[in-house]
Image 1 (cartoon, protein in one colour):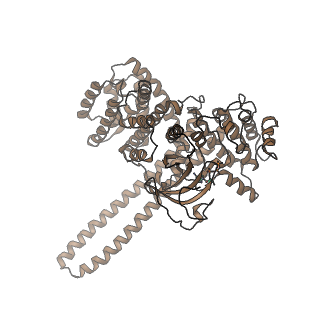
Image 2: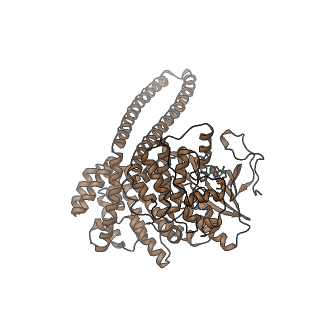
Image 3: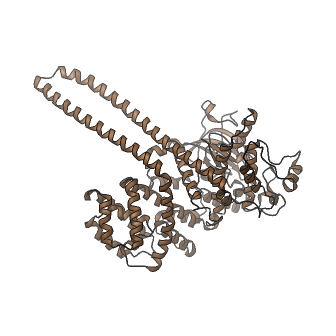
Length: 631
Ligand SMILES: Nc1ncnc2c1ncn2[C@@H]1O[C@H](COP(=O)(O)OP(=O)(O)OP(=O)(O)O)[C@@H](O)[C@H]1O
């Protein structure tokens, strides 16, 4: 029985083709039901409008799950789990915004995927007698592997991977219905409780030998087969026949239209013995997937570049139109005014107009120069994209090592003191927080700490606040236009990580979200902050100078170069008038303040002293910024 009012007869359809629906009352003070999308085994799904979200994120999905039957402690567990799930942040994972209890209904708010689910897509292909090309299959498979690897690293299992739970948004797949089964069933084994479709269930799950991360890989193997053949990998007349095929039947093969490597990969995902089955990390490390990742990375990169330049052109043409309109109106008004003027006034006007004209021409020259530089920068970026990312990622690993060494030795070197990476410090602090149960001093860390510690619903208010904070102000408007750019960029980052071997070392290496949630949440917050700082410094110094300074500082620190030498070198590298640096120094104060809240290993008095000494010198704000990004 649906709890929320909806427009009658609007089921299982997507809004693009619909007439505007009747709006019902506001849910949780912000969501307006637009229409019913469908009903699954756990509850009813609605498309809602989030009245508090920015325009691009206004459409969301509300899943209404009746929990009348759940005991209070189970509801608390569901809420806690939901809170942790909302911390997952990966472009291949359906964004879980919030959850709350509305009388006897547990509501989950997630991202809306206008291109429906993979099951619908495959059905449509079947109906129209079409197949998916291998590059397309590989692209989606890579994205799925990236998403599954991301959750497995955090020791989270999906437990219900199937084509219906994979959503599509502008050709990016999103693993959805995430943890809904866990939310409602606690830690119990889905295989022992779920009596739905067995098509994607692994042999070990069906024979009650426990569910593990490899069971998710089995399901992914079944999805891969389905993407290529448009039928289930294991089919039968009835439930038992399907189960028998899965447990004892032969492993199916892909048609010859698909490559041998893809077939081999699928077979290794469908190994009956889970200990012999490939893991997501190993699959991502395989040569075949690595090649697909490379080509997908280049494709996404050129897409983001194109979107940005298109966004720029669109903005420019809008501004031009507005300007033309304004000029036209002004001319009309001025003409009538000029008629009434004395000769002297007319003369003065002509002089003003001449000056205006001169200014306009100068402006035009500046704009042309800007465009030229912008194009050159884009070219430079696309040429150096790979190098830059590799360098930055490599540096980050080295930073971590250096940081540990620096802290351990506590060298009384100014740079070493300043160079504590925020990420490392936050991580250390978080670990000590979760160990000692101390209250973190950093407000944002504390917020995460409390939010995990208490049994509150996880709401979007927190993220609103985060978004409002200065750190999170949107930086590049073109990146925020449709949400797609940020997805592509995030996907590129994850691919880079995998390709550089930074995140495929071993599965389950990250702390378990459920038990060490605070640490992992804060680590990702710290990483995010470092990323934003890096972007801010890049904006100030320009990408080229940033890289030069970064490289120089890295080497100078390794050589243990003297402070004076570093200062002189930075002045030459940054080449900016002294006055402009003042603002940067204030920003660096902020960095110091953060470190002040972070210790344990920071010597506050020393930092204050250094800050005082750097103010009159104002050598280079960049140095301070780099110190924050440095171990
Ligand atoms: N985030 C979303 N974006 C777009 N459509 C969605 C979203 N979530 C669910 N839907 C649509 O809502 C309908 C019901 O989805 P739901 O996930 O509840 O059930 P299901 O996946 O069909 O079945 P089950 O509950 O057994 O997994 C489906 O048609 C699905 O495509």
